[in-house]
Length: 228
Image 1 (cartoon, one colour):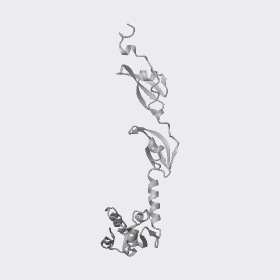
Image 2 (cartoon, one colour):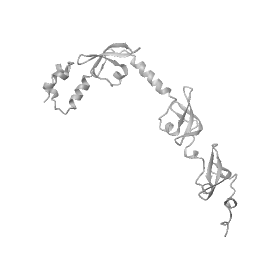
Image 3 (spheres, one colour):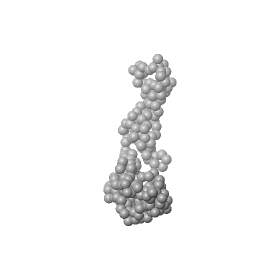
C-alpha cells in the first residue's frame, strides 16, 4: 500500500527552512492545490509567495517573480534615477520609485522606463512648452509661413502669442504663434478652399488659372469658368 493510505498531512515533506533559488520555505498551508501541498515562502526581495511543493522541489519556481524583472536600482533613465522597487504593481508590471533631476519623486513601471516612454517626473514636457513659448515670442515680422507673411504681433486673449499676417490673396488674419511656426496654419483659408475644390473630382487646368485670380479673396466665385 505504501503511503497511499496515509493522509496528505502525514505524507507531505517538511520543507521548512529549505532554500529554492531566491525562495525560503516558511510554513505549509492546510490547503491543497492540484494534489500538492502549498508552502508560504519568503523571497530575498522581501515578498512572500505561495508555491506548490512540487514547483519548489522541481525548480519551476525560484522567486516571487523578481527574477523575471532584473533590478533597476541605481540606473538612470533620462532625468530619472531608480531608487528602489515598490511592493505594488500596475497591470502586473513592477513599479519603481525614481528621483528626478528636479528633485521630485515619481513611480514608473519597468516597461515605460526601458522603452523611454517616461524619462522625467513631467518637468521635461513643461520645459519643452516653456521653450516653445519663448521661441514664439521672438519677433517674426517679415517672415513667411506658407502663404502667410507676418505683419506684426497682436495682443489677444491676454497674451502676445498671436501674429497679424497678410495672406498672398490679400486677406489679413490673426494666427496663434504655435499654429504658424508648426505649420498648422499656412493661409487665411484660401489654400484649404483650393484643396477642397481639387477633391470634388472636377478636372482643372492649373496652368490656365491667371495668377491674379489666385491672389484674390473671391477665388470661389471666379474660378468656376476655368473648370473643365
